[in-house]
Image (tube, rainbow, N blue to C red):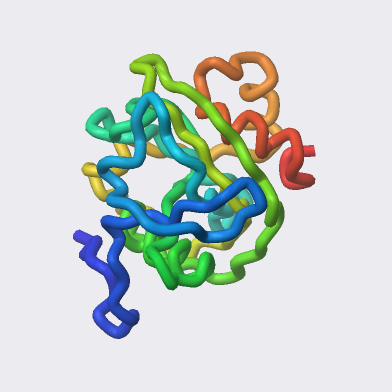
Length: 185
């Protein structure tokens, strides 16, 4: 079984805090992650990562039912928040290991200025400046059940078709990101 803890050689970060930003994307403070997501969520930093497996298929995940926002919804491989002072690439690698038990090889920033606001069925709002990465997986997924209910590997073409025909079955950020990423063309 994979160890979902952060690599001990990684500098210490506080993953319980998120970076709050203004409309221009300038950091204006931090807040406890648990207190940020609600009906009036402030704009904060996040990131999203689309992961290609060795065979060229995409990894999609169904968010754990215990997640505070968009629980049980199918989405891209993983999303997260960089800790205060943490580089986005380091945060993506940390989350890939924690959530999916995988390493990331090639990691490309594909949509640096992606921003979205969405409300889930319980009234919880996501409001993020959310750079989007595309990465190559290193190793086979061994998801952390606290983060991922299930996962699947699909071709980009099949996922794009599903997003067009049943957008309500997926996270709103995945639906919007797929429209902008050449990977889904």
